[in-house]
Image (cartoon, rainbow, N blue to C red; front, side, top):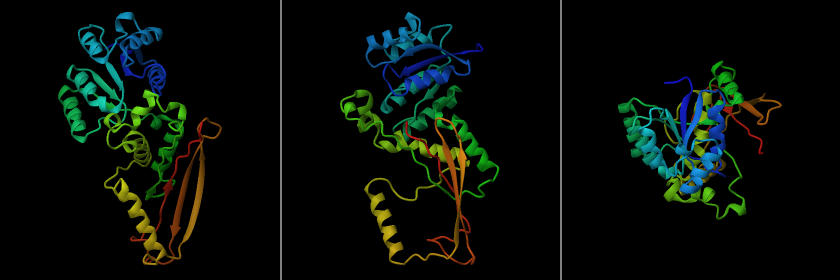
Amino acid sequence: MSERLNWGLIGGGEGSQIGFAHRIGAELDGKFKFAAGALDVDPQRSREYGKRLGLAEDRAYGNWKEMLDAESSRNDRIDLVTVATPNETHFEISKAFLDQGFHVFCEKPLTTRLEDAKTLVQTAEEKQRVNAVNFGYSGYPLVRQMRAAVQRGELGKVRVVFAEFAGGFFADAADADNPRVRWRFDPEQAGVSAVTADAGIHALHMACFVTGQKVQSRFLPHGRGYGRAALDQRSRHRQGSWTEDPGIWRKRRIPLGAGTAQPASLDASWRTDPDPGTRCGRTAPRSRSCLTHHRRPR
């Protein structure tokens, strides 16, 4: 394997939201060479755009199957392929490339069905190939600083994490009929989990990455039941069935990434209980820490 890995991209065509980020990210450290691509669902546009980006004419493919067939027989074949297509296509494409011995870097979510994800994991293990999902936000310096602060114990024990992935770029009426945007709202293409897996998974990964912890169980179900359960919970609190202890709330805000394009802050709050036997909700924590990552809208 050469010092620079030959890298291929599927999806991320002209005007896509993520194609540019993948291409720039892959070339930042000089370890990857953009060598092949099937960039658009339209074969002609795919080939033309690939050539404009500098791909050789015989490696600017019309579709991913054409790319797989051709690259499999080349001596200088790609070492790694990134799958940046609508969610429903992730499994078929990733499985096909893994079967032919390629490493696969897939956009989130890995698949739209748990059974398919397990199949990919098993295939990758059998082929001894990498099959990874990219969570690019974990590479930002401010996120690494947050993680380091937790690891050093600056917040104490992290008990509660608030994570949010907010963006208004799907609210533009001009995109109402834009196929590059609308597929995200089609369960046949995006998956039945909708925004939970398509965007919320970033918040979940960020919380796990920064704290070094993994989610063990869900507190409330998704869907309509979530709102009802949350309302019932607040109602019980107002009615006095949950007692509030007289502890003192203390807060601290640590600024992060000052002067950068994406400033952030790490918020910590904790309660000092004068009486160890007091209760807050259904548990009796002596302290609580909350970690928040703020992003300024662009």
